[in-house]
Length: 155
Length: 139
Image (cartoon, rainbow over all chains, first blue to last red; front, side, top):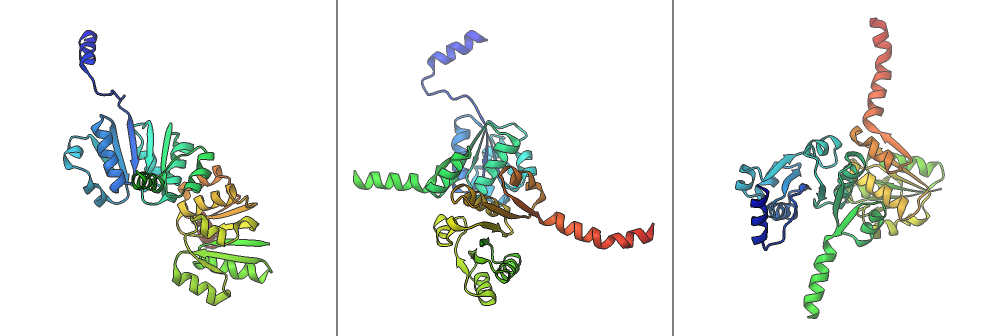
């Protein structure tokens, strides 16, 4: 069995990621694309959204094969977040359209449920700085787009 | 005392008028034009129209010289995050927040919000107090 696995490993050229359990909060354009990308690379993905219509952005086949599990619930309610994370996720990514929802869900996940890694999408660099100091990892979506536009415009 | 109130709904409006009566300087913030207009008509032009989670709106409200920040919206995520911004960025001495979902009490405590007004608990308490004499009679 081991030898077999090693043989397979030696012919592998693509980068190998350890499969992670991931909880995505918010199934909008960003959350759904991310869910697909993360399940493509072999991760176990759950997506929480309070609106079940949002899950129509996910490919039906992924849901049917349980590679992405949609969960209806409120990201700012500890009860719902706990239920969504009963598979003990390694990381929570909060990417709803609201930075206050993302930051609150992130803090419930970090300080109460104690999910090891938290990533929150925010839309203001300064707000990001404030919550980075409180131990919340942030990504400033607007800044990434602006940086890319700037780079391409100046190229 | 300089007080900033987030949310110009019923709670925000009565708070603003009481605080003004007691001689405090008050600023209110709401993103809903209708609510902001109502408050301005009722107590004078003290309401800024804008998103309280936006730093430029908080700057306009003069948050760096605010003594007490009171969040009164119906959305706990807005109340929590803006109180945290008031504390961490503007060093506001005292932060007060309405709590709408009892579920979130622990998080508000962990975030260091000084006074948490737990709405469901307050309402239940009032009802119980009101019912107490009736319940005693029945026993």
